[in-house]
Image (cartoon, rainbow, N blue to C red):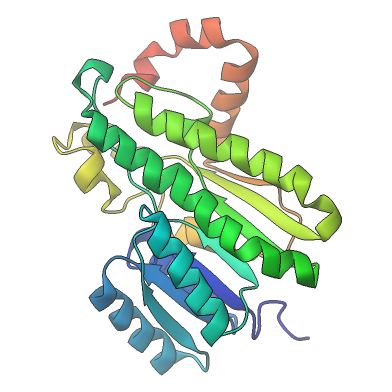
Length: 264
């Protein structure tokens, strides 16, 4: 039986490391062709070499800063012109900075929204006309449990991920008649270099290290959901139970869950 991902073209933003890199590798294992996007062209070229040497698939490299909307428009137009198709888009690029609200640098906050929200929306906007014309496709947005449970010292980051979830849920309803799948991925902390920027002190990583997800585990769940009707991927499951409790009983959660959320 032919794998549903075989010969599909999958675009992954933020593919140079972390779960983006792992998603690309696991998709290639299943016979998909990769469109690798990130700011670090050197790392993308290394990943391309690794993928093409190990698997009989194509891998295409495009340097892209998703926070630059003009660059997003130009790059995706180039991809669709040169390759001709994008079957699945994984909006993985993003970053966070953990600071108290009164300490947040507003330029830094703007950059977070530019990358995490507007860049994600811009990438999606570029592929939708193609997918709608074909009546098929899949948009996968990497959000966060932080978009469901706000916590101290992540006011701006949580706000961006709340925005991603709102955008994703609206998009899903818009595209239902176009047979385009839309999935949000809401992981807890993952053992990647994300925290080199987000948590310069290292205190948060130290406090939650035993709970941190492995990038390949998250990537496996994402790739397994490709071209399915999976609405959300919530990892780990017990943390998602916390988000459900938070949505139903926010006052109680903030009182009894204080010890858990004050980890930064």
